[in-house]
Image (cartoon, rainbow, N blue to C red; front, side):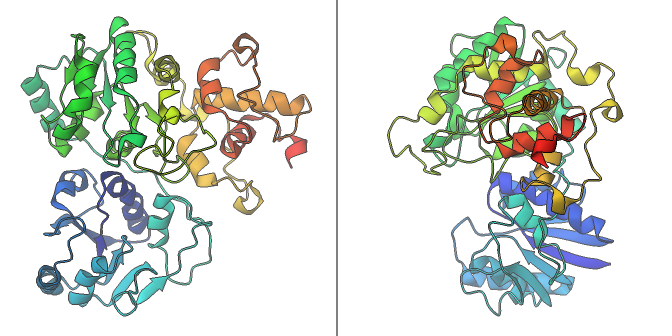
Length: 451
């Protein structure tokens, strides 16, 4: 059996996305996968069935520690790994596999790592725009034809025993549906939806009978406080849980609302309905990978800027996303009250959903990241179906694909698709080729004008 050591990333979201690589490796044949990772990530790795064990990197992010890396490499040498896959692009991240004398050391070209990496791969950022694609590509054999790799979305497995313990510890009524809020963002305020907006959304949800749980680290308590103040339906759990606890609590939630953060990827990997709010960052690069996801982004001309703080000082990319809009995006998933059945509970099976056109030749498909469409638009996703049906009607009315889905043309919602018009308006944007691909999937016949 092949033994593989993966040098993992240093961010929560990236570690979650790395599970797609682990799945890919397992699909390629029997193998044992260990992951060299920061200590904080071990609870996440423990909830990935593909991982044999997590090996703790004794150094913090950014620390060089040549001696510590040499000692760890020599400790790992007796494991006799066949291959190391180094996900970070830094020089120091390639040292431990080299010191462990792992014969095949795979990684992308970066930071003068020749010799340390002996299975060097060029990174085509245009071909692989998504982080998860880049991770999975490193699992392919060297010399494989250049193509965007297909991948499975991450799927974390919650710890049921810990869930029961947490429910007892915090006095949670698991029979009353809760929506989890993750208002923090490690990167900076340009990725944080305003606390006042979270507070208003919490008021709207608790008025309807939902509970709200606010999750995050201790440093997120400052933004959580105004969300919970004066609202007895909100439970502030920031700073009271470990990362593994947050994973298990999220799995108990009816849905989640989050900034672009590590916990966003955790929630998506637990397959719970999710409204993900993007400001300075881009959902094209690191989208949440799941089946029931609403991406909330205004796509302003100045975005994405990827800045930690708004260079223009207004953060309109976030303040302009109103709480009512986010609530409208959640309603297809959670219903208007806790007792209302969800779309997934109506008896429709995935086989009864609109066809996914899985036999389509990828080379003939529009250049819109076909595997991302599969990840975000699975059969049975009625929100995407509404977007798709609107696209088809517009194409059949003689509009070009570039004119279809005009989110900002002043269309009267009453004249739009009767299936959740507000979220359709919220998620569609002019020229959005991802929505276009979703639209094609739901057309009863391929629109001739788009072929």
